[in-house]
Amino acid sequence: MGLPVVAFVVANSAFGLAVAIGTAVGVAAAIAVLRLVRKEPVRPALSKRLKALSEQRHAA
Image (cartoon, helix red, strand yellow):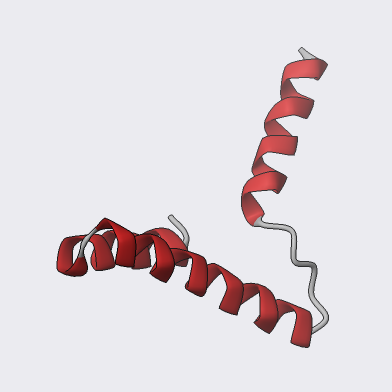
């Protein structure tokens, strides 16, 4: 589970859906900016997992 997901769940239970969506997007944007400042790739980890699953499927 990623940090934006955790932020969404906490904000949703505390403040409602609209605030939770904004919180999750804000956290994801902050992580992207931090990664850009550190000159790290911005591509989410999820895309790496999906690529690995796709490669496994094609190899079989």
